[in-house]
Length: 460
Image 1: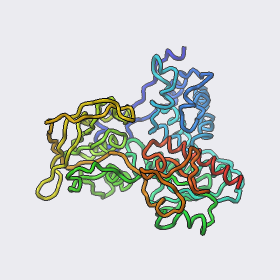
Image 2: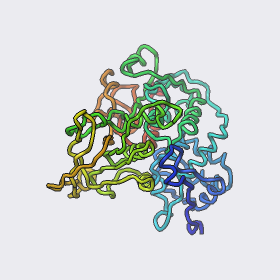
Image 3: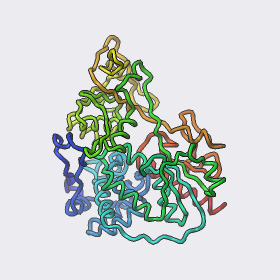
Image 4: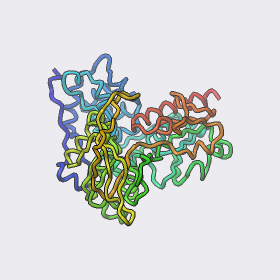
């Protein structure tokens, strides 16, 4: 039976080697490996994996095509629901979504859906197919932000005949895909740039260095430039700090700043002269995917790197795969540890971080057990750099310069499930609405908003 076939392992760089370079960790499947893994799928009559996919990819159908060697057919099936399969196959938390719902995972190992999607997506990037588009319908839509939510929304609207323009605040297109996720997890030239070009091939236009709220406003886009609707997919790029003593010392920075400098300014590339100070020892505070990205980047830049997290490993919000890779690469994990203040030297530079040991009490509102300080357990970790990876919130600039756009107490734009905001004609989705989340959830929000925008303009 198909479920007796063991899961096909994915080739990876040796941990000792990859910890010193920025080349991709996971090397992906060959056609033979992908076909063998696809043969494990039971093609369930009631596939739970589809319901667990935020963009609704017809997973059994594309795997069935791949199983028979029809990679082109598999790519066409995926393309109906996802505009960024090579990206999603690499960075989506499949273990808690499609693969987590796979029936084979109940008593064994689920089908490697993410790795199969990556294989098909990469084939499509290397074998681009012409796309037949409908005639333009005369309606114009502005997209604010070129991250996953904006790209997904733009793709779906372009396929429906809309004239779509994407406005990006930075000088490179891609949002968090470019500046937030390290090269060793998501190659920029080989994957992100090609995925963006596939969106551009649909007729989508891009304008960079446009800060909505400064260069233009939502009001001017609609009232002066004639856009019929606007989608806000500007993400959540405003970093949070702990508010503890010493956070203003030289050597304390947010994970956003650190990763942006490393990724967008290519500090990882020896051909670029981008200074990025890591010293000899780096402590990253936090336990999410961004924390893993930051600590593994610091390791590759030559520092001894440590994660400090106030709960236990069981509560780590990061993907299991990322934690596993970090441990393989020699990252130290200091669990049940909470910083109380950053220690500086006489010149104002970081020289350490003071921490308390914690123990877990009763579950909090999120269901995770609340950490409680252990009295008298103070200790110091010597370090040169402290990176705060504590989550982010949306930049308040857009809402502050737009009439009738309601925001929540956390600064997120208020929108319903379809992305409709409190201002007619303005839609929003992704991290700008939910706060920091995943690439695939942002894409799902972008797709829902595209459908709502089409309905709104058809009925207008």
